[in-house]
Length: 337
Image (tube, rainbow, N blue to C red; front, side):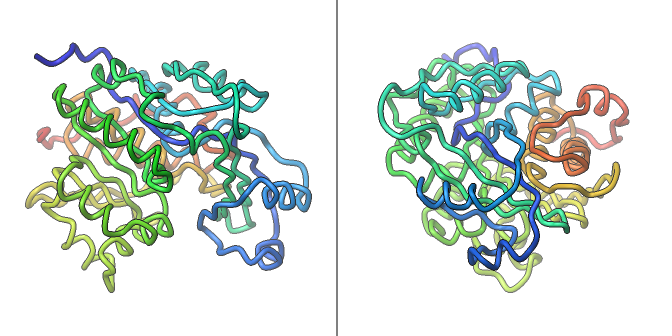
């Protein structure tokens, strides 16, 4: 017998506080950083980078946490599992995600590395380059899991970045097994093209055998299958999971479901300021609509709308009223799958 579904989506990911700073391209060159990617750094490197930039905006982040916060802001029932330390940044993270209405009950660690932080360098072209110190978040293990929370979800949402840690990987698999046993679907975000390169074989196995809903951008899906083009990668992933939602920035998104193909146009809601969180908020809108039984094209449209809003501001947590924004979308005539 499956547990009653009191939550729409429960996500597991790195609990991170973001520090957003606007910089020139010269700084990326000076630190040998590849624009638009995420690099892991140690605490010393993080401090050196932080000392080289101007004032920043501190805001709770983390890819899956941003998605769950977005779902909560849309009025969905969301829970998040992630590890922080009992320090100032840990307190900020916990406060922020609870304040938007998501459940966050993971106890803070009382020893070990400090709460994770990510220095997000935003260049004048609105591209974001991330330098992440994983800190306490990397210690997430099966003992941190609230499996009762997982069992209450209709969808378990997993962050690809977790695959960088063996402990977190075990937690990831344990949660997926509980979700499956309780009739939930499993969604995965590939997170970053470099992350895909590090774990290509195991990600392919995950997609083939454990994932119902896959989220990836153009660079990530192309890397996953070592394809020569986006079209080739889309052909490769078709049929390997129930739904693949593939985002392409200004070209919108492509949603694959069996033999079905749905093209979704992007929403331009204002000047492009910062692409941080665009993929996270696309997943938030998509999953919120999906849990309401909406047609896939409408899931993609709500995802696109949420992404279109977040890129008009600095930071990954929407400052606009997402419920009011979503209410303006008219449903399509397409039937839900």
